[in-house]
Amino acid sequence: MSSSPPETRPATPADVDAVADVIRVFDIELVGRALLSAADIRVLWTSADLPTGSWLVERKGRLDAVAWVVLGDACESFVASRPGRRDLEPFLLDLAEQRVREAGGLQLRLDAFASDDLRTELVTARGYEPVRYFYEMRMELNGPPPAPEWPEGIRPAAFRPEDARVFFDAIDEAFANEWGFRSLPFDEWRRVRVDESDTSLYFIAWDGDEVAGFARCEERGADGFVGMLGVRPSWRKRGIGEALLRHAFGQFHARGKRAAALGVDASNPSGATRLYERVGMHVASEDVVYEKDLT
Image 1 (tube, rainbow, N blue to C red):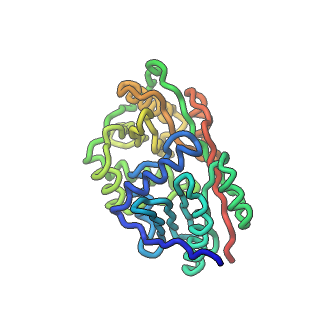
Image 2 (cartoon, rainbow, N blue to C red):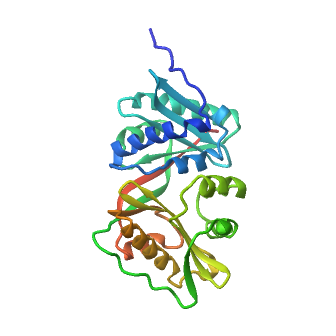
Image 3 (cartoon, one colour):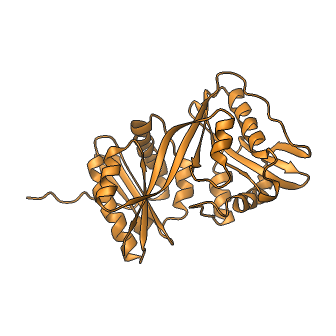
């Protein structure tokens, strides 16, 4: 006799911390550290319809597994489970594929760490193909990092709440052609990235009254994490990105952080991976984006 499928319920915004904890232990089990914060999940959920496109599996009052989908031209799914409950992942992926088909989606994407043999076997057996690779890059902060060298006319400054609009606009311009980038409505972005976040590690490189570049960083345990680093097209190839990065490293070290980390598209057309290697970072883990044709 076959067992009945697990009971699920949709996620709500109030579940974000419990979901972040499942993802934290999932990441630690596979790569040794957490790679996604509660703030990141809040941003991802702004593009998801949680009542119809998310699923939580609970047991004895504890969240064991989570999945959600983001619909669009290429739909995206996210699936995570606690160690010992990875048997739930095929069931959750079934739900995600079913929801995307119901919505008329043609493709579905799902990430897998390169070291995650279980996830890799699951997606390849279902006909998913790798379409993109992302790196987590790290650098130990064993001493004070080199001071940044700012190009002439460029002035670094801490982010202020009144800078929110120009900071947001600079992100949209800098990342407009990045693979997989989804812009949020400004009010949603300001809520999750300014009103509900610690902005003390957000930095702006000013050229007069124009934003030339920016860094959105945060503390993650013993790490300083660069969540987003960008330079607007008209200011590229001048060393602003490297200066912002070194500025962030200095701030991390001043706060007692033991390492700096970030994520990057391995095929980034701006050559970001080379920049990060030049400042001393190395690839610590690899994430593969798989895609399946649902037609």
